[in-house]
Image (cartoon, rainbow, N blue to C red; front, side, top):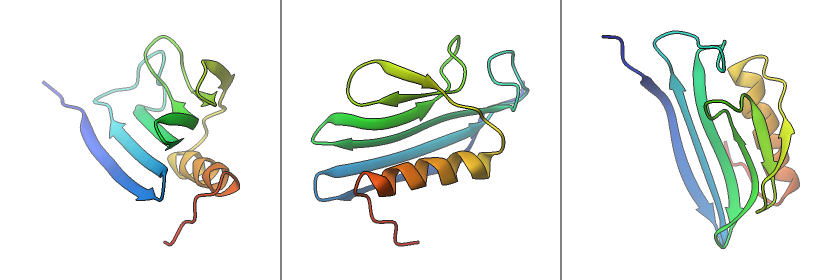
Length: 99
């Protein structure tokens, strides 16, 4: 039986800011994840969500803005673009990338 493969697992803090990025390769594409990836990208402060990108089953690719359930569709193209878009949004919200 094919397995899900973890391909990114990153977690870091800066003061009260917390970033988590988790990306999995699925054994095969699905209707909700035709690119074959499952992901959760999160930036929060003091336990409150500032922005989160994910693609939970049944909801497809989308972003959560703020701590509420405000969702906006996300047009997934490539994993690299997903990470770049998330990093750019984190930088706009005060995260300093050091890579």
